[in-house]
Length: 319
Image 1 (tube, one colour):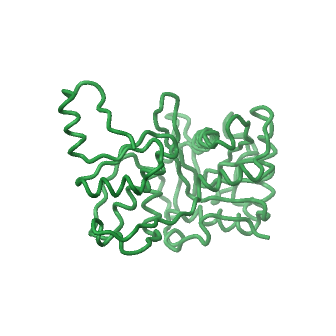
Image 2 (tube, rainbow, N blue to C red):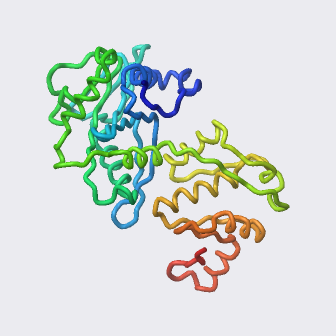
Image 3 (cartoon, rainbow, N blue to C red):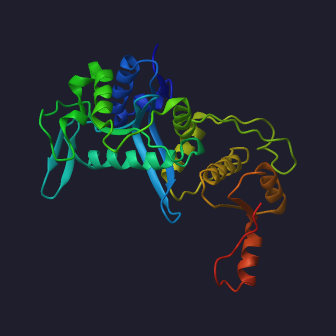
């Protein structure tokens, strides 16, 4: 029985893009070798809260989950050569054409993403207070690694190289074994933990919009997000500020409402503004019951700011 991979199948746009060639090789190796109890997630991102309520971005090339072993964050770096220069402390990757590119420290990326994902999972009510088994590793699918530690935080045991792709399942298991108990005793994920990982990284949903006279084009049918709109939501998960434009019926309002709901459900106090009164009423009705979400017309927001003399924080009315 093959593992559960997300997305499945891997979109053609990713397979055709040379920037993702290394990740495609790893995806195919995971699909061919991992047993059925594993779940794998490619190209995922999330937004976590830091102490004090500040946002913290998180992302990973691959997240691999197992009900007993836990969660593995895998950072992938492609290239026919990987090079590190201690002075000035930079990493480089050489592409097939022989050109070198500066890359981020993959071991720092994998480690930071592991802890960011752990903190995000611990926000899930079913996992609060638990010690989750977490691991991280780095994959260089285009090169052969040295059998010695590259640095104090880069032992060969957490590195997957070109030769390992044919036995990727055993390498994944050995990395899990290496990290077992490193952060103290941990509880298996179990089904609740596997569900939490899936709901965070690959939650399916359908946006249902009723017929109405306000959003004439956008409310004529039940809208299921297209591949392009899924990509846009993933883009928004990685981008703190964006401007989106499109014609009537392109789904701008639907996407804005879904993004606001997601942030609110993740614990962020979220404000969604719009231009006119009917749209404000419609959005409030569509978001009824969602905590941490405030929907307010822009003009009302300005009026409250003016009345308060722009002193202190403007407090929009809560739903």
